[in-house]
Length: 550
Image 1: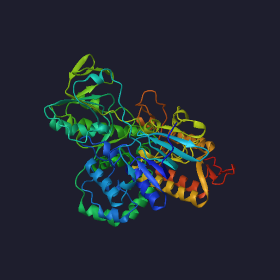
Image 2: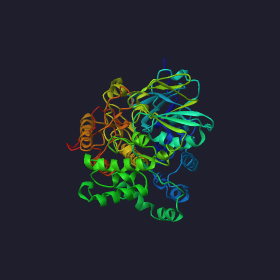
Image 3: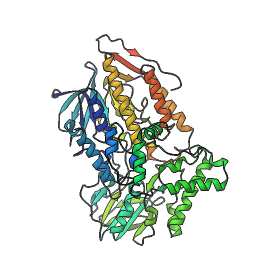
Image 4: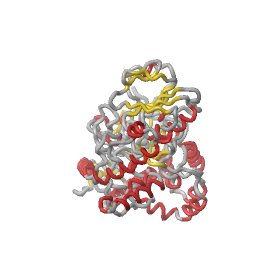
């Protein structure tokens, strides 16, 4: 017989990262009894776990920050244009301390199950320590990239040396000096860490299956004048970010690449490259839609790689052949330059995949690469991985795993039909990973907070996405995705990096500006497409209809 729940909450929040802490702050400020449960030993989320060498944000520091407190915005000083993991973690820790958030966070505790009690209209949640908690609302702030992917390489457990995953990096420093290091994967974490590792290790063997597009960060100390300008204009900066497709305050090109001269096109690409960062993809309006325009942008980057990497054969292996933007665009510092070092060796495993791991090293193409240390830069089971590792059961005991067996289905990326009072911050079906995550997190937290106040003030005990609205949103998302070329490769946006995972383009692609306006319209229409049930025992509920264009 299961133990009764000892704790009653208005809201239980899973995850003490950037989203979970803000959700706690917002609900607490509005009079809700809320608590966070966190698997890690402290706050930070992705910045607590991802401590690999060179880890840093690909969003500029001044825009990767909370905006709920003007005093916090004015007081905090970022040291670099793109903040490193240690600095971001210090920032999150500062926020937790400043607003006394830790007192409502339970650390070193995983949520293993969440079951909706239909009679009580509450969630009964159980931890890995056996604690049972009852909560009216459950908010999943579990992050989009929080379940590391461990490929099933034969012999991995028998490797003689240490094995590290970039997403679960040790808290103590790893010494690479005098070591032969193998790195499997060439995504963002590999691109950031390889130049750092190469400075210490005797040899670095990089096992690349697919080359990735990357643009330079041009990182460095933040200019004091830039800081003064930002702090004086934060309201305008935030407002412009919210009106943009990417959630960034940035300059968007207004012309089509195919309708300007070659000289103007190259000049704009060069300008974006010199500026650095993700705005490169916003150089022209047709890069997401026209294969020819996209090819031109891709060829510009490929030519940059050919200029940087001295060995022509290595340079060509590093040149991606995919659509630029269909995989996550990486923001790098001296990654391509690292291949000019005599101790960095690129091993192409696209046609001769890794066969197995032996005690001595990695076997591919019939050759054993002897290494002392192995690093798995193999990414994550993105967006749905952490949610599906929890035994979540909604109405009728149906599991989320069963509901999403053919791919995630949500309404706005916020809720899924059949699972009342459960919200997902930056869930699948929302812009999330295609935007400035801080902008998307802020939007969802404020939306959820306002929703819970609305329910309380209007005597509602539960809210649930209707199946009709969910179906319409999924169809709309698929239609918007089909208009672009960003889904035309095997990326983690599609779940293609996880064997057996359904191939569904998970983020909402039409832009943050379009999405946030739609969310506002839905609220203005009385939570259109959601089923609201009053506190009375009367089984009759209120279903606000949904529009056909959603």
